[in-house]
Length: 357
Ligand SMILES: Cc1cc2nc3c(=O)[nH]c(=O)nc-3n(C[C@H](O)[C@H](O)[C@H](O)COP(=O)(O)O)c2cc1C
Image (cartoon, rainbow, N blue to C red):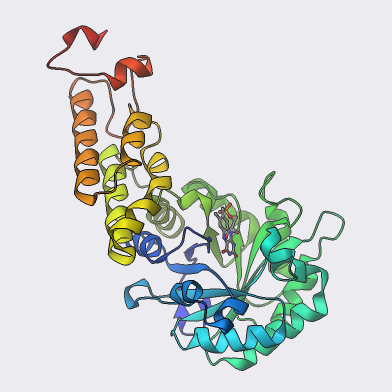
């Protein structure tokens, strides 16, 4: 797949996700094999006003490359102005959001709302493409609702407007995130245009990645929710898609390690206080299914001190190691005995041998 100077065979891409794909998470996913990463969407109006929080989201680092900045807006003027400002932060390309279903975006005429205003969608896409010298792409949904699926028309419009690729999430706006993404509609989009199509929606593991390429004929795929707490999905998908090699499941040590890595990156970019607070919502996904996870999570989310959190995570790892030594936990984090959670939480191998059941 080629976008400007970027050329990657069947890339596996980190999807833009508000409040998730910040610099820390992008770097983490990059380290774990994502071929291209996207920023969170940034409001064109807010960029134009110089709103500090939004401007900060435009900042990217060289080690993230290739990286795309995504913007959304409802008018040609705001989008053209914001595009020029975003370009000055030197992303590899700029992406326009024509798919966001949430009220604060679509309710204000931006994101997926533009699927109901095709002329305006074309006008915004072509004006932005003309306004910057870097490549411009778009990300969209298959339609507003099931009575108005118009993805083939939309991708043709986007191609005519000068978009260099289009990412298609196989749901309508009214689906929000319900049901299964419709990969057959993505295949129709691929057949309807000659720019690269990036398929998106419901890739949760490497087998889904292979299936999505096969069923859609897309040039690249994009993973969103499946990467949260699971950056390993990128290397695993790349390996199976491009080399036919299935990588082993991440071990519990690697999962705890990834949580630590994410935490440190978060603190590096946001400072100790905000970095630590932002990480709180991620622990349960990194540690999902491991014995005693709710207890350790409850401790982690109360702590503000980075060193204390690191210590708690290491102690949790040590507890997992003792369970592994006893044959009660596999390397991949599968708990073998049917102990009640209470017993697991209170598990003290040296001081309380009665709890071994
Ligand atoms: C928390 C969250 C935030 C999102 N933010 C954005 C966004 O900023 N821009 C965008 O184009 N899509 C956004 N999306 C949609 C995803 O990029 C993606 O299209 C969708 O989650 C389907 O892919 P998945 O099944 O791999 O998650 C968001 C999704 C989630 C779950």
